[in-house]
Structure formats: structure tokens, C-alpha cells
Amino acid sequence: MADDAPKYRVTGALVYLKTSTPQGVRVIGFKQNAIVPADVPQEQIDHHLRVRLIAPTGPVEAAPAAKPKLRPVRVVIRVWPGVLP
Image (cartoon, rainbow, N blue to C red; front, side, top):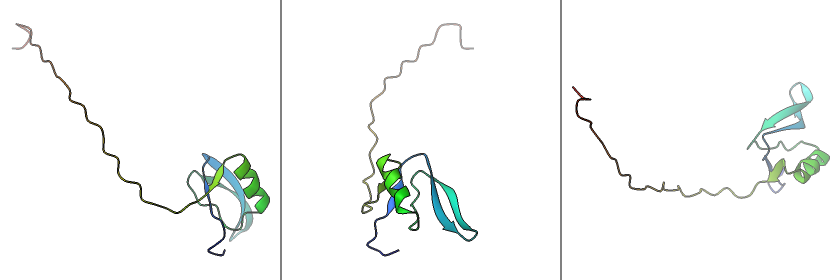
């Protein structure tokens, strides 16, 4: 596959695509976020793009780590007479 050829990533939970393996052409399931092999027939690519099960990949950029939002918590401890030894 040429470097300028479009690349696709699986966006659905599971997508079955026809691809070449050492045992010959097979239909294989690809899980979410898997890269679609270059030898998948174009009609399958077009179909899965239409139904939004795959999407073109873009340049990978590192997302900044999100800081968790912390809230102050008020804790009230009550001790009833005779409960604790």
C-alpha cells in the first residue's frame, strides 16, 4: 500500500472484512479501533463508510491529559452514646 493511500479505522464494535491471510482470502472480524487492511475490496470500504462502521484516519495527535475536577467534600461523623465500647 502506498503511503498516500487512505487509511481507515474501525469505529463500530465489530466489522467483518474480506482480506488476504496466509491461508488465502478470508472474512475476518476486526474490533473497534483496529486499522483496516489495505487489501480490503473498495466496495466493502464504501459500504462500511456509508453505514459509519469505519472512518478515515487522520493525523494522530496526542490529546492533553484531562485533569479531574475535584470538589470539596464535607464529612460529618456522629457518634451516639453507648454505641462504641
